[in-house]
Image 1 (cartoon, helix red, strand yellow):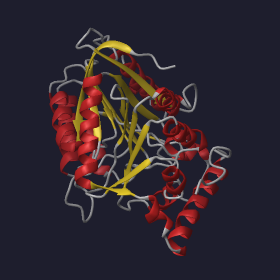
Image 2 (cartoon, helix red, strand yellow):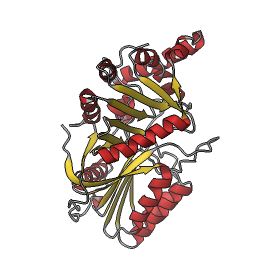
Image 3 (cartoon, helix red, strand yellow):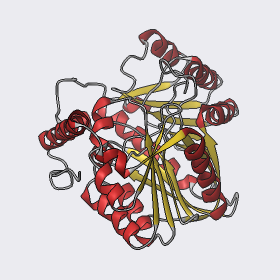
Image 4 (cartoon, one colour):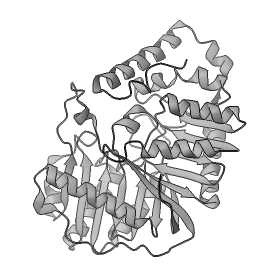
Length: 391
């Protein structure tokens, strides 16, 4: 069970406009150490600014550690990487080897976490990669996403997690000379009055920690559940939990991506619509821009912001990290922003509309779902949880 720490200050950051100024400002003030983990690191406007301040930090003697996923940032320029290392930065790629034609489970285990810890005194956790949220073809509005800045006792757990991940990457790539030196103890003094927990998904002791946290909150819900998720293809246990909540009178709202970014997940998700709608779950699709959010609010008190989608790749394969918050003010702020997005930029999906779909619109989701099942079967994961569609 996740451990909640009291005395935290957790600030909600919306999109790149809220996230990057806060992150860059913290890096500019760093005096001892920086740990940054990201799935994508693009050298666009936002990414270049982050890379520049990281280099400047390393040049002034700050121990700067950057861990990037080998697939998500597979096109990172070699000349910029060389320049970063020459500045004194320590840069590693998580599982740099990856064949697009291989479905070996080891190669599909990606680093999907987005975490930064500055001097052990403040941390950033969420779903925002190091990429400009307008860096998407044919998109005017920014990509819809969230992160949080954390100060307080929870820093101990987050700081420990990033140091452990860096230690693991160093040993795996024979970079023992880059192992972190003894660190200053993180600042775990009270900075506020919020209760917060840090949960990770890995392939050792925490394989289901994030999913279990969701299921526990859903199981205790009495009034309403709001979930906003970019890639939503939960297993049967999760689907049943949502339907059970709806059956006991809880309002269950799921806000999903309405634009097509990845065809497979876009259509596979739609195999769930009929059963969820019939069970009283509200489904909304965000249409204004691409949605990358991975957040939830339960009963206006419990909330989570993080990197984990609710799909088999996040819940069964990737390394993920979420912050849980038990605080009515924080949950209320996140809930209000979700409602605003639903009212101003989203469309509610009606059951009658789904029933009128023609043969092709029924076939494509089934085909996509079958391909996801095949991929998970080849890797040996999720045979029971993803054994059948719910349409």
